[in-house]
Length: 149
Image (cartoon, rainbow, N blue to C red; front, side, top):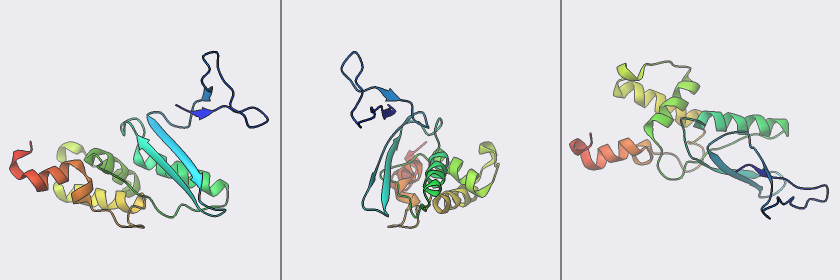
């Protein structure tokens, strides 16, 4: 993982094994790529491999900060697939500035933090984010009911 090292001519620098050399990226446990659609629109796509190591809010804020360095704004986020509830609660705590204990958390607290995460991660800017479908535990709960433990 990491960025491919290039020489002064923009060519990949290869190691002894013939594979491109890489420098470590900003985060651990993440695979990311970015590209420009045009002069004003870029997209960053990533797979978070362990949300306990690199959180959703950490990555979102890094993208905002890097964008700002170039005079750009982050305007939306999108989450494809399923996300663990804990990843959303952690992001929600960051954006809500909340330190609720997991032991004493009620469903209403979870909903509040998930809403804060959705807003903070900008998941409500494109096609919308349905937590009941996109959060693993909630989609299982709604589909399997009491069978989930």
